[in-house]
Length: 414
Image (cartoon, rainbow, N blue to C red; front, side, top):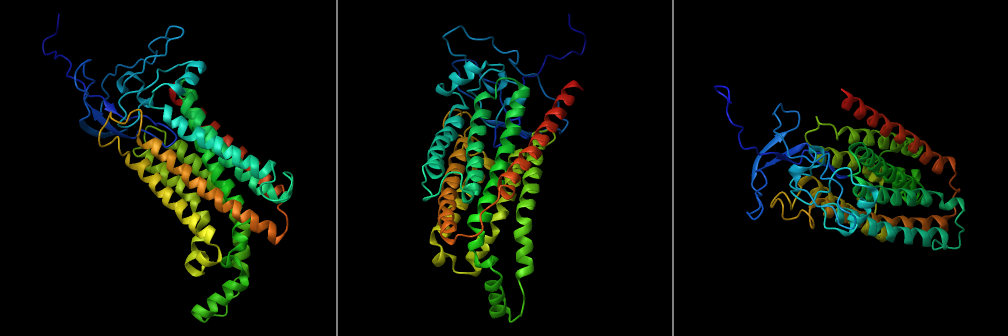
């Protein structure tokens, strides 16, 4: 018996894309879609509304299966779910279907790489590059592909650091996408570690730059810069002090930036973050500023003629990064036609492809810089100035990740 004035519940239109999402991020910006149509009816892809997390809008009930549709019978793959059948934090903006159930086993996660889920190509678009770079660095470091230099030679220490950064970021991305449905806590842990691995890679790139690329720039040659300033401005200026300061500070500043970027990205997974895609894209663009000397070199000196390999690959790499950032922030093409690109062709897959192309070009000019470094025979890199920095960064990143996991646990208890 209904009380007087009681109204039946209104048709619900759950919001899509609320979750913190994948390595490139998710949720914050929420799109509402009409409720899933019954089987046999046309799929709905019309946007109903845009609301922000933390805006005070009351959430309507969802058909979550967090307890999961139970485990599938042996030998049969688990049924895939729609966006309104999974926890809100697991929903990707504009991706309506292809979700795996929560609390999958590790075996089910491994089997899903051959099933048409919305994470399958996220995995393969980084697993294939991982194998490619593993082969390439194996040739350079272990098969003396970098010249007649044994793998333990100090000159290769920056390359070892750089290789560890590239391989770790691809491996961690694969792990996060593959095992993100084990449990909510493990999902958060994997993506925090994914952010940490990207920062680790960014710092490892700076280590390689500081030894293999920056010493060859006229911009960081005190004599060349003093002559340039005198010719262009007519000033008698000794540039040795600021250049020495830059060389001394570049790695400590890059390390602090890597730690800060990781903390910012972990924080962007919080419910109060309205635009995590943009936040993470901007944050991870900040360490790219460590490559500013190369850009200034091309503007002030004739880098195109003096080092065409560096000039071409460096600028092409940044073109790929701009395209990758566009897809990561815009959520195109799935924003245009939600549901059509759930399995193949959505923005995070394109983001993966273009980031791979950017790192592929970067490896080219780092390898070329190594060849020039070996010809010049400068002072050999030290373990403290290479591996020591990487170990210190690893410790700092572990502290950041642990802190955010503890905060997440406290929030759940509250």
